[in-house]
Image (cartoon, rainbow, N blue to C red; front, side, top):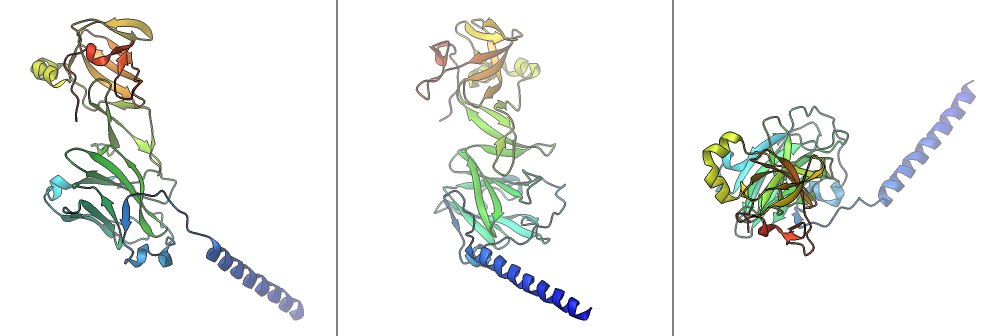
Length: 316
């Protein structure tokens, strides 16, 4: 009986040693996964960002019911501040909160963002406007830090940051603004040019930032009270668009026309730039379709959009 037990133990020890050696060989021979090349600098003096510390610590699936959290620089410290702490949060999910903050170098137009000892430097930044910690994919252990930076007078970009291979890493970057509403929904505000410069909002999901819809919705649709109180200035600014000629459209899927002299305002537009939904003061909710062959001249039924309106507003 003892002899049999010794034989079993000997076999178990041999198998254990073989498995350990195979695991070491695999770990030493497997390169760290790469990412897209981005315009950032990684702090290589920080041990957390070196190859020797290139593996993530085990994630602790902590409660994230308090997310998203938003930091708005102007309200907290003002845009003239060069550095600030934004959050204390367990962003790497190792069980211990770390300080998350930023530091601007206005002369070189860079912004360093740090999470604990990890940091990245973003290029072409005048100010850091907003930061949001969120969880874009509850099935993934990774959390997301959305940083809204202003390159110059309203030229906003949203940069997604996360922990990858032990380093603070830049993910997707989009030319848009990002904000959180009172219901803690994170919205992305994007630009369209079909009816002058207009902005619409939509939500995204997933660590790769996948849009939830192809439509962008105007967040503050004009109300009858606002139109009655401020009609002339709304026309002057292009929020109310005045038709100089009949405009072909569809209403409830049927061909129709918005009449010369009608005032319309935008409800939503498609990201592809080929459709927009508007409402007229005469009571119609209509779909307008567009073509754009040269990349910047939008047409309705083959006629340039500017031929239909005399008050479209275009932002530089």
